[in-house]
Image (cartoon, rainbow, N blue to C red; front, side, top):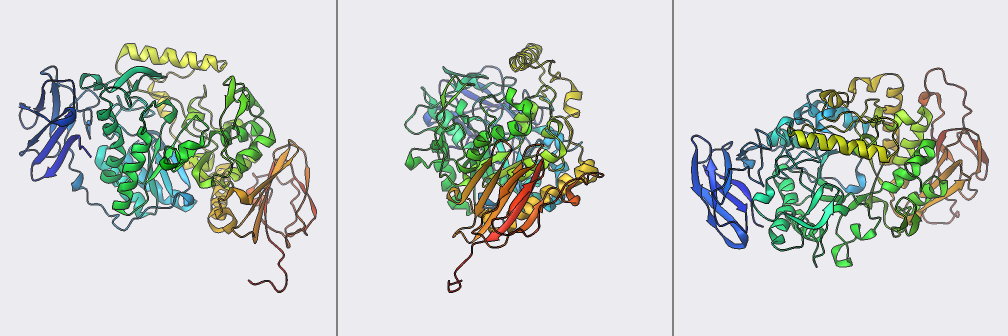
Length: 622
């Protein structure tokens, strides 16, 4: 591994390394305690390096390629003065870690919680999250997934305009703030995932091309020229990004990474960048003795994303399953079909539960072609599912969350289907108590031409969706502040009920043996017309069974319970008074212990969960 950036080794010694294969010279400009220039030595493979023996952590510096202007380090670990300012030396060994006994969590066991650091608290910092961790843990959440924290322009941004993939946003608290948060999470048994972006570099403060051929015009992404992973000089780019995961795992004790939009990364090499990352991370995993998870966001509907490299795959441990969201959402909100015209049938939701990809070779009108391949038989813990995420909310013209779009009873259906599914569930911050704050798209650029380009781009994007109004100005501070969740409401009225509903569902998921079985062969789904469905899951070996009965409609629906299961016992009923809003007591409850083969009538907009066991012969071994 080639260590790039400023590698502080202690006792005032620091090795500065930068990749610039087509440059003839490189100068290190140190700003502390006094400005001075130090020539760097050209080494193999296009790198320049120099060791300085009188450096203190926090020292500011620039690089001067070919004696030109001074620019920040492309592999900077900290930009305390923003994207245009000097880089700073970080002593990663200085943090007093308290998580020596932490060995991570199985991906199978995770309840993920996606959050945006800037809008999760009024302070918008890593350390401000810590006081809320106990409440999250009490809800059953055991894994934070932080939206990107790589240094971006200004003080507010979704994070996908980051320009320094090795640096931690200064306004969030910088490297030390992130380490304190990770340490606090591990102390409470909470894993930490980080969203990283390897498909583009943000525009403002992007000086990469002044150092080397980081980009290629061979491919184009929605954000401009693609990163150069397979053209001339691509070895340095591949090293830069394949070593970045190791940086987060080693220096920050991160437990997993979520890779943004991998379908927008182009690499025709014999060994893709994803295979290279997989190999390096798995080697590190064996060395550190804890689980290190790799999760992809992919728009390919291709099982190779989560297949091992030796089987021709990319080597990710799991991927986001968008089809689950689409199939469920359009059945909960009739307006959803305007956004997802290829979805809308109950059979598609059933397929999402039993197979994974709904589009697995069928013609997709949205894409005007056949799309996807089958994921049937792939275990459930290879997929992450969600009802909302930052994209689903932020890419609505008014930033509406699911609780703005569907009624209270259907919110309970959505949560139950998510948490009773065979997949690894992810909640978006505030979803667990139906937070009603919008989540807009926001940025904080300083370049006027870029500001106007972003505004116009957003308008065009929403016009293509048929929006009847213009999006909020992403540069207004109010757009950002109004996106902060209202944490104090989680114990009030309907918000408290939804919070308790999530707690109960997570408790069932963690305690019922049936719900811990992610083998797709042990799942059956019965479609009840276009009104609802029944998800039938069983434990390994088939002794314990669990029925989840869903009625999406406004009418009653009948279902005959399996007769070959011993007496059913009701675990959960969304129409019990405990789960109803004040004043709503009109529902008829399903029987607590129905007989095998009994026909039950599902109330409108309801969820009922039963558990039962197979009838064994009297002389069968136990």
